[in-house]
Image (cartoon, rainbow, N blue to C red; front, side, top):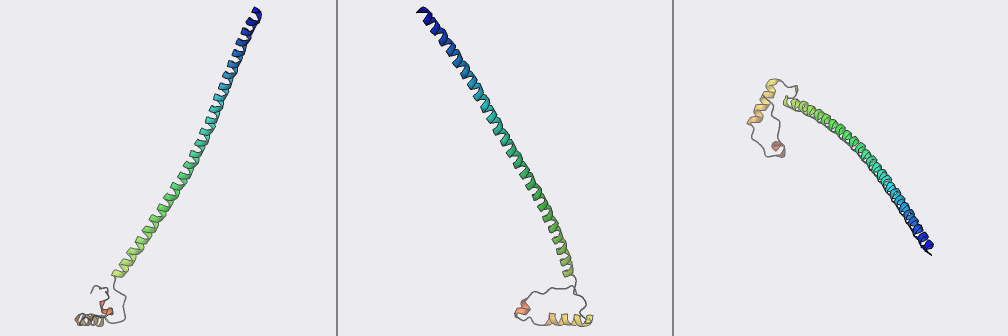
Length: 129
């Protein structure tokens, strides 16, 4: 009977060692699997961030192009405005009346009493005399 107990003790130790070895191998495999899945998740996250960066860079380029176009339009409109203002500052071209007649009409207009009609209340440009 002593042999059987000793044999059972030895078999139990072998089983215990085998179970521990299997458990260790399982844990290493699970740890390796977790590391692989974490690595895959991190690679996917990096790729997503790279794509976001590409999109952001394209948007910044488009915004810069639109800003440059807006500045060009503003410069064009300012130039046209200056041309228009300088044209308004000049007296009208020759109306076909002699200068004395025009001067006389202006003097007569300046001496005439102001009427309160809508036409009289409109502002008129004053040309240099």
